[in-house]
Length: 310
Image (cartoon, rainbow, N blue to C red):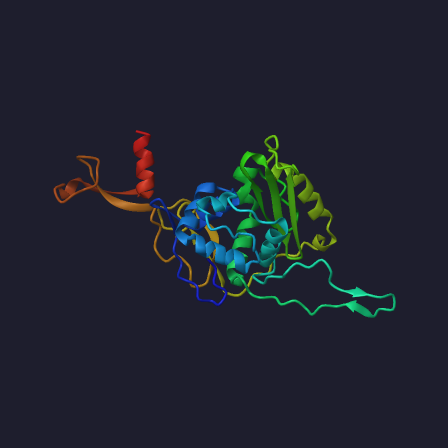
C-alpha cells in the first residue's frame, strides 16, 4: 500500500509461503504477470487495503461483498475508463485526474457556453511509489522472459504498461502510458463468448502499439521525472538485499528513501560444515574437521522443492 501523506512503513520484503521476495524478484513478478505473487500479496495486504487503494485511484465498480483472493486475477469487474484513469495517476506522479469528455464549449464568438471549474488533482499515491511502479512497468528487460523483447509494450521512448487476460480468453487488454498520454485497449467478443486463445498482449497489442507510436504527444520521447526521495543501491540479483561477497554480479535497484533493505543477503551466506558428515557442524564435530563454505539458502519453500526433487 502507498500512503500519500508520507507515513510509509519501513521496507519489508513480502513473505510468500516462507520465501522472501526482495525488490528484484518483485520487479520480475510484476513485469512478467506472475499470478501467485499477486495473490500472495493480496493475502498479506488484505482485501480492505486493496479496495481502499482502488477507491483512491477512482475505481468505483468493486462493490460486491464476496471478493476473495481471485480479485487480483480478474475476480471483479472494472471499466476500461476507470483503469486507464488509475494508471493515469501513476503517469502523473501520484496525482489523479478525473476523466471528462468535454473540457469546455464556446459559441462562434468565443463566449463560453459550458466552462467547468478546473478539476482537483488529489495526491492518491506517494509520488515516489508511483515512480518505482512506473520504473518496473517500463522495464522491458524485466518483462522479456514472458513477453519477448519486441512485445507490444516495447516502444522506442519511455513508456510503461501492463497486459491482462481473463479466464477463457473472454477479455484481453493493455493499458500503457507515457508522461503525456495514457492508452487503454480492450479486445473481446461483445456477447462475452471466449476468444480462441487470444491474450491481452496478442489481441490488444496490435492496436495499442500503433496508437502510441502515432500519438503526437509521444514524439518528444519525454522521460518520466524522478521525484525527490529515490535512492539507488547495488543489490543481489536473487534476493534484492545489499550485495555480499558471495552473491552473483549485482544490479542497481531503486528504492524509496527510508525503505532501503538494510539486512544482508539472506540467500547467499556462509555456514560451518563438518567434513566428516558433510552436514552443518555441531558442537560434536572436531575443530579441525570444520570448514566454512558459501551456500545458497532459499528458505523453507526452497527446502520443500529440493526435497521433492530428491
